[in-house]
Length: 152
Image (cartoon, rainbow, N blue to C red):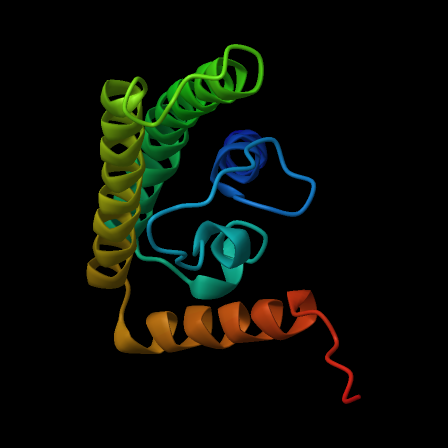
């Protein structure tokens, strides 16, 4: 029961910090849009049949990543707000904002690098079958979230 409560808390934190668009807390475009494995792992955690060793490694990721990501997302949002105000209220040029723009680019790159590292860690923890299952679930999720395209 304690593990389920921990997973639910982690899922809440993970979802609150890693969603980049669509009504989520953080609305920033990343350098590279990658799928978020925890979106499908946490709700179906038991179905992956993780060994004790895999479970310990997954729990470490679930326990650490949201806080790391959240801190960087908050910093990006504050910086974007400063830049937006500087441009819209004070007519600051891109040259005047060069240092802030460079910092913003670096932060977004670091977030993306952390995301890549996390995805690769998850891939290394999982067996080929578990990874295949996760990928199938991510593909289903992607299809559900894609807007319907109309031909004109």
